[in-house]
Length: 252
Image 1 (cartoon, rainbow, N blue to C red):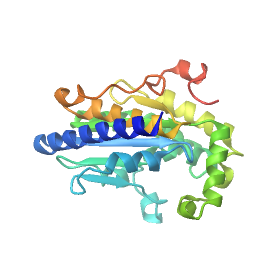
Image 2: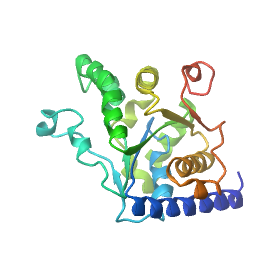
Image 3: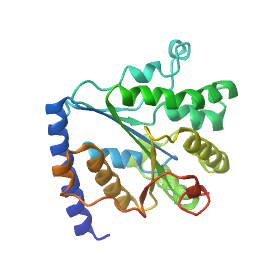
C-alpha cells in the first residue's frame, strides 16, 4: 500500500466515522468496541486512527490497570459495566473482560474455575449488552511470531516507545504456544451470532488499520454513509470460523 493510497483510504474512512458518530449522537445509539490481540498486535495504533477526529465528548477509550483488591472481590464483569456507554457514546476497550481468557490463563492470574466460569458467562453477559441496545463489535488482531519479535525489539530500543514496554513483553515469545491455545479456546467459546468475533491479520499495520476503520463504518454508520466506503478487505479482516485456526488465516 503506497503512502498516498493509505492516506486517501484513511481520510475517507475517518470522515465516514465522524459522520457516523454525528448520527449516533443524534439517535442515542450506544457502541462498544472491544479490541483484543497479542502483545504488539497494533491495538494502540488502530485506536489512535479511530479516535483521531471523533468527538472527545462522545468517545472514550478504556484501558484498565490490574484490578485492586476491592475489585477482585467483586463480580468479575462489574468494573467493566461501569464504563459502558450512555446515549450517543462510543466506548473502545483496549483490552477488556477478555483478559480472563488470555493473559490470566497464560500467566495464572486467575484460577481454572474462574476461567471456566468466564467462558460460560461471557456469551450471556454480551447477550444482555446487545439485547439492551448496545452495538457490540469485537475485534481480534492477530500477528505472526516473527513479526511480534521484531515489534517487541523495536519497543525495547526506541526511546519514544518506552511507555509501551510492559512486564508481559518479556514472556510473550516464550509463551507463544500457550497464548495461541488460549486464543483458540476464547474464540471458539465466545463467538456467537449476537456477539461475533472478527479477526484481523495485522502483520502489515497500514492495511490492517484501513480494514478496521472500514469495518467499523459498516457496523456503525447508517447505510447512506457506509455506502460511500468500500468494505474491509476479506483477506485481512474476516468473521471468525473454526477453520481459520487450521488453514493459516490465524498464526499457529
